[in-house]
Amino acid sequence: MAVRSADVFRYLPVSERTARWGLYLTGCGHVRVPRSGTRPAPGHPGLYRFRWEQGRILPEFQFIYLIRGAGEFESAATGARPLRAGDVIILFPGVWHRYRPTKGSPWETLWIGVDGEIAHRMVAQGFLSVDRPLVHVGADRGLRKACLGLLRRVRLTREENPLLLAAMATEILARILAPREPEAPRPATAPFAKPMKDRLVAEAVRFIWGHDRPDLTVANVAAHFPITRRSLERRFQRVLGHTILDEIIRCRVERARRLLAETDMPLKEVAYAAGFSGATRMSKVFRRAEGASPAEFRKRLLG
Image 1 (cartoon, one colour):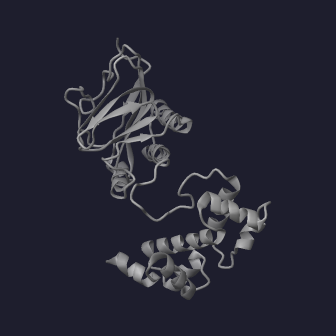
Image 2 (image 1 turned 120 degrees about the vertical axis):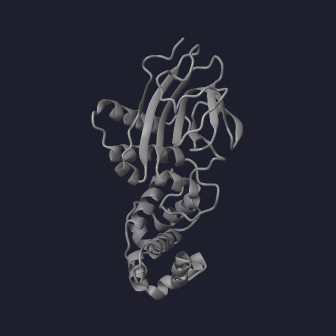
């Protein structure tokens, strides 16, 4: 039996200007195979078709969200792996792979293809790895909605805005990768290193990261919430494992790190922009957190 005609896929042209954006969409689709069906659907360009016996090598990344069914996956980097509903298969350019449903199992996937400098940077920085081609996200309605929204826009618009499509693809990648932190330790670069279930703590962290006043204190933070300072401190410890003051300092140090790495601002200006009372105070706190002074840290980055 052939694949249902409702299945849809699109492959997009990529201009030189689009490629310079850093991340671009190469294609997307929605595949549904009944229990007695076959895959893949006919009509794919030769570059993307494959048989199980031969496998395939792509020139780009693909992210395949298995909504329904079970199967098996194999790549040159990992060998054979079982597949279950809720898995996302990550395919890497230049890496041989193959996958298929378990015999008698239904199969439904949503997929996108992307490429560009940003995608390769994700590999270099440990967000993606050929050794970790499967991410289990479960029944994620937000991810499904984002994939279907992207596919709908590609299908219904005559002149797609490739940069807008890239932005929508970026949201999908963020939803896939958010549940997992890279295995290699790395400094936090955002207020939330993991999802927070405590609304007050989340709002307090946002408040801290939304202010750069050198005179911001724990008392200032606590005064903005209908809870005692002591109770808020306890909730910070329970949820984040550190104090409110630790979060204020973490925010300032992280901002200083980014300014030192990405600008040539003088140290005095970096200190004020990061929320410190001055360069001397920043140097003391920064050295304690990073093991080097701000000047040493910047010099090390410059090689």
